[in-house]
Image 1 (tube, one colour):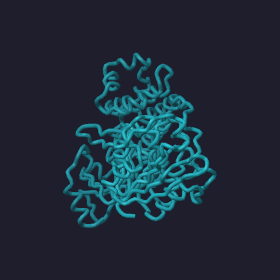
Image 2 (cartoon, one colour):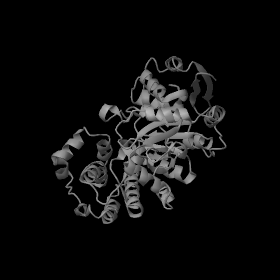
Image 3 (cartoon, one colour):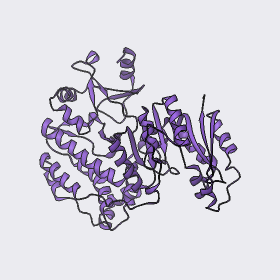
Image 4 (cartoon, helix red, strand yellow):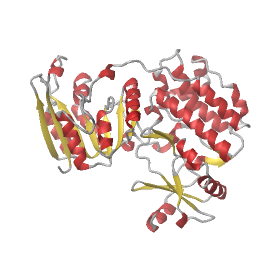
Length: 442
């Protein structure tokens, strides 16, 4: 940590975190803590022989900057997490897994460190690649009784979405819609009025009475979550789509694979976003080439399959469920929870095999499609344009709009990325596509 970074940290105004001021700059995360009780606890916690167990359970890795710390001021250096997920961007299975891991971490904090958490909401958790993370370090405090506010918050933002995902009385999609709300919203309002409980026949678990015995409470809560495992996502349209074509991520075979591989290898982007990632072949390719990758698709079962593949391959890819046409908006007081455009902004964006589905099948204007891609991209977009004469498009029998042309796409992207690299794919099987790389400089 430099002296300038230290001075900036002290000058940073505190927002929504009484525990300490926060500075995120140049992929570094620093926090200053001046509360004496927290200083003593965090010193003890970080220097504890059991600290690595907490890291394995998902606590954000944190170090003390000894050079600038004192008895009255503690400077913490947290690991940088490139992509933070919104609770609505988990599949039901992801959310169930994250909930279980969050409570497991809470139990470990209490048993070995006598510590609890002030907050019990899912805006303090995420995934970094395949790894669960809890990143609100200064939510940790010394305590021996779980507060009513913690239990109410956990019930609202964890238990009820889990009940919705596991219930046969409502569509499991309701869980994701409920998780999209924050403080304000129909689902939250119905919960407060008691209507939700009647719809899904929900009763608060009886073990909430053990709030004065946290070890028993967390053990029973873990058993409760086990029994709330979400209904497996149904098979969907894109589950069997073939991306790899028998190629390995390190040995591209097709023209499309080679085009993407060459650009990412040459540009070495820090972050890559894969739009409509399917089962993640190109996400894994970018990860293999050193990038931090975020990938999303709208089908729940496809994302669950993608996560399994990413975990098996140990790829550095953060996967989530989101509809390209409906990016997650900012939310919360003062819109403090950032939109997906902000959280997933990446050096290079991959938009492969997508434009014809969005602009032809779903009738979304080409200009809007391009603007969505541009909103995520810092340095460039790799786009696969599928010509109206492509054999797969012709089967749809759809008249393309006037601006569904490669020239129109060039015009829309050139406002931000004026340089273009193009490669055509035309073969005897009726495939007619163009690969384009839009950037500030080739």
